Image (cartoon, rainbow, N blue to C red; front, top):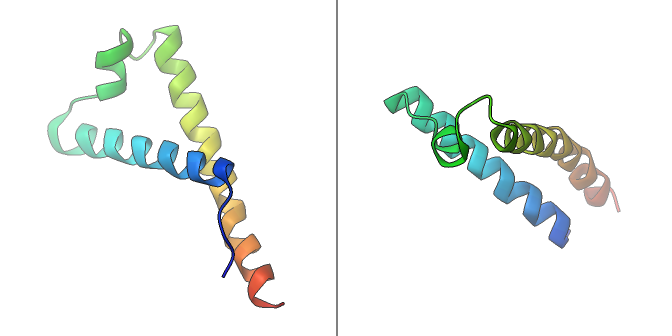
Length: 72
């Protein structure tokens, strides 16, 4: 079984943060990131949204990397 490196674990943490935030928005109409960092349009909030989005895109590669390892 392939072990995840530190970067992959960081990506997973960012995805979990994004998922929790979306859950809060969906169930309670509460955006935790916006509440902590000054609103949805604040520079820090937008940076966090962007980083979480990039983490989601990076996570797509995990599907293919695990398949390649199984072929060994």
